[in-house]
Image 1 (cartoon, rainbow, N blue to C red):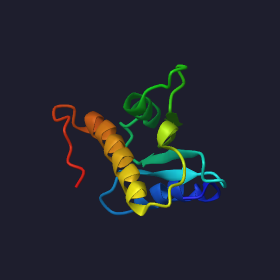
Image 2 (image 1 turned 90 degrees about the vertical axis):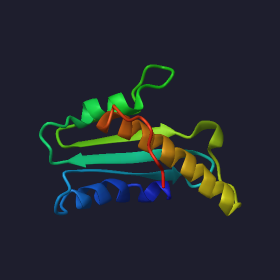
Image 3 (image 1 turned 90 degrees about the horizontal axis):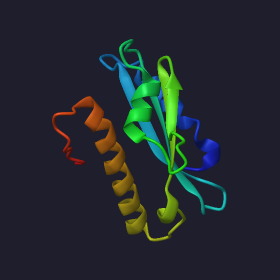
Length: 127
């Protein structure tokens, strides 16, 4: 997704929490700059659950970078995160490579979120 279109991520999360039987939504995607050289995973958490603190949840899920800065945070009912892709950043015309890159980041993010939701079972299937 282009960096200019990144607002679609929190908008999708906002929409999902309006659905019946949904109290919390996490939406994320790989976002790139105009030159397609720099990529980050940008995500958004929205919740109607008063016992869930988005700031605490995101900070615990994704931790800090090498400089001690958290990858994300939040406020009441909403939070966001931005995780640099580092070495794997950059455009590649090979669709298979792009798919594999997404699968790796998707699996890692799901694992970190699932660890907090279900701490007794750290393994998650990404199917």
